[in-house]
Amino acid sequence: MQTSVINRLVAAIALAVAVALSVPALAGPEDDIAAVTEEWAKAYAEHNVEKVFAFYSKDAMMWGTNGLTLRTTPAEIRQFLEDTFKIPNLRVTFDSKSIRVFGNVAVVAGNYTFDAGSTDREQSSLARYSFTFLKDGDRWLIIEHHSSPMPLPRGGTRRT
Image (cartoon, rainbow, N blue to C red; front, side, top):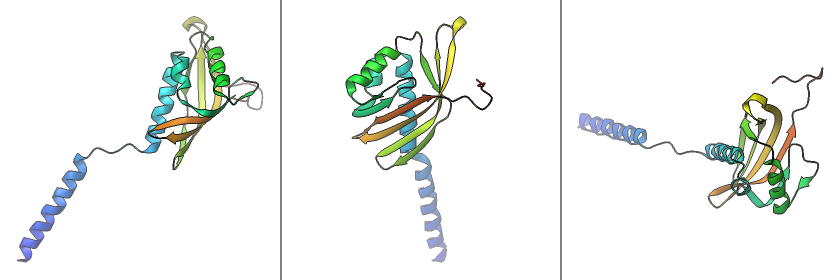
């Protein structure tokens, strides 16, 4: 009788382990946010104003990297993107990314590099950024985007 109970227990544990191993791990909100930021960067590299603009909430605000004013309306954000994409071959690469999720709000901050121009005359600019996302249904939308040039370290020279 005791052997039967032990055999059933071992079988139940083996079944539970097999089921657990066969179920794929579900992506968490941090993975979702990481994917959204990479999709944003891809659309940015395509200079596709509509695609990039679609990542922003209608209530979004943006401090552009070299912007002199805070953009607080959809029209201002769209115009900033249109002006930005006049720079030939502009693209962005995330150098670091720290993601924090607070329910339906997520904050991503770090450093990124803007590259532009042709391969023989490419220029790079280092910047720091933060995105604040709000979950709207099943989508994460940017509600605040801040970007600013990386300050020069003491001594006045920047490493790239």
